[in-house]
Image 1 (cartoon, rainbow, N blue to C red):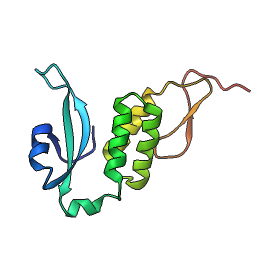
Image 2 (image 1 turned 180 degrees about the vertical axis):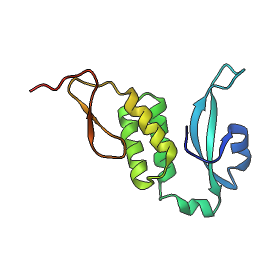
Image 3 (image 1 turned 135 degrees about the vertical axis):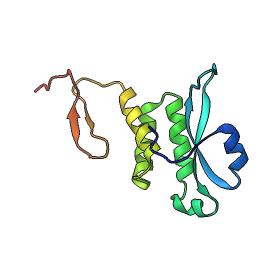
Image 4 (image 1 turned 90 degrees about the horizontal axis):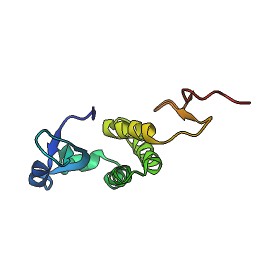
Length: 130
């Protein structure tokens, strides 16, 4: 689902964050636990991994994730789109963008762009009006 290679929990993140570049990924419900658990993406070993990301990318990512978690889906969508402009292969950013699009209430007659294609598609159930 996340289109990433290495996902770790909070305990592992705390142990490796000095040696590896890590970013927050999601909050998930694990069997047997009553509250959400944070998961993280391990991006690579420092200092090599620092050079793989555009300057300011992790800060922009964290801002987008925070907006999403707070329910500001339209603003989060804009931030995730910017993340994808800077790093088109970012699977988690694409996933969050798709989630944002699915949560934004649609207005009558609005069309949504197809993710990554710049085109539009009609909203199901809404007829075109002259």
